[in-house]
Length: 293
Image (tube, rainbow, N blue to C red; front, side):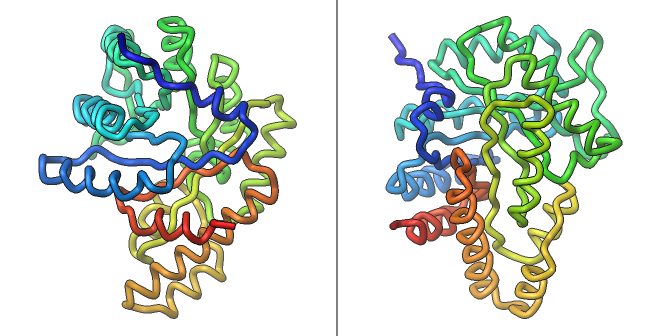
């Protein structure tokens, strides 16, 4: 009999800061082997759980499941696969949920998802789901013991008409059964603190986990922030620009900034932090070493 994973709600109930890491599914077998080496290196920092992303339009459905199984089977990790409603019928989503549940997975990140490349806006298939709150409701109706995470946007989802509309959408996801919120990346902690205050004022009481991405290059972070609507603080931008084309210096500055953010978040009382590491071990290992008391 397959032993089910602990739920992230149970981990959060321990009242200690959690550390989680996000991976994306490799495109080929060489990438899978590289991921194995990355995860083996990261085992020493003992992440509380890891997540596995889901490609635009559901394009990595099989690979997300395969990587999730690999991380559980070979490394004994608690895994939270992402699942999006874009590109799937309700029957397909139910089948994916059932397969995860049968495999012992009890945590899922429920997302609307991005459209395939070249498609202006996500459009559900006939009878499909258009929003993440509908996916949350479907998953909870399928398996009540699923622990579901949803995404929050401290600086507003790029498609939301206003911050208030975005917050109302987040509340719908939580009211549908989400157990916690993981935020999109941000680089100014005051943005996160204001977001949490607004969530609490709106009646959103579940834990809100900050998402942190160590900067590895100015080009990379500029592209990422343009996609998700996050702002780069002037002080960080100036430092990265001063580093010029010296990748080692840029990475050092990015890790120092992330360390500053995490230390401040932990002092504030955040329930943990979720690292967007882009399948790279070194930045996560350096951060973990920098956080040792």
